[in-house]
Length: 164
Image (cartoon, rainbow, N blue to C red; front, side, top):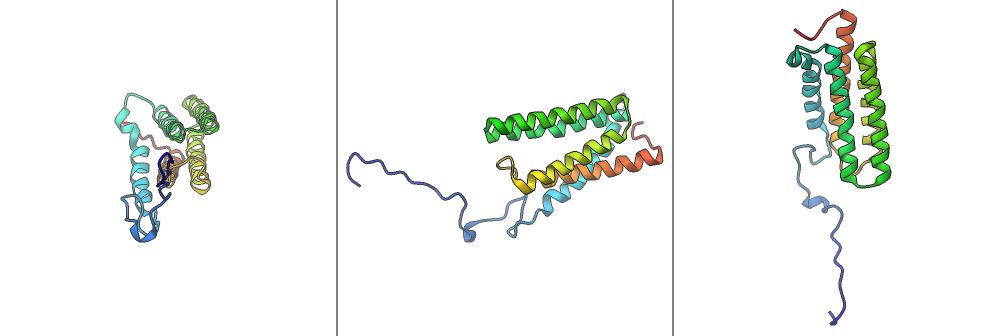
């Protein structure tokens, strides 16, 4: 290398296929089985969450959960670093906060709709990769959302209250 010249070495974006290893989140074949299985577990836990907050109404606990899961994407957006992504995810989170807030004194069906809507947003995120580096999160979160929404919907129809 001649003196005074700077050589830039660029690492490959991804390791060659033969050097890739499996991760806890995805298998060698790209399977998302692990995040989906854990999503079912956490969806059931989310549906049962009013048991841990017995002094609050079911809808308050579920509304709080909906705002938390929506806000996670703000953190992903900040990690992504693009101002447009941060702005979009903040706006989307604000919309879910409004739905959750309305559900506290309104219909529990708003929570079911909010969770299902967030699940659809997760599927869209997984399909488009709108935010960088979230490969396993959207399938996990969509599963949590759909499982919890289904259990809550069954509970609403049956007149069941999840709190003590």
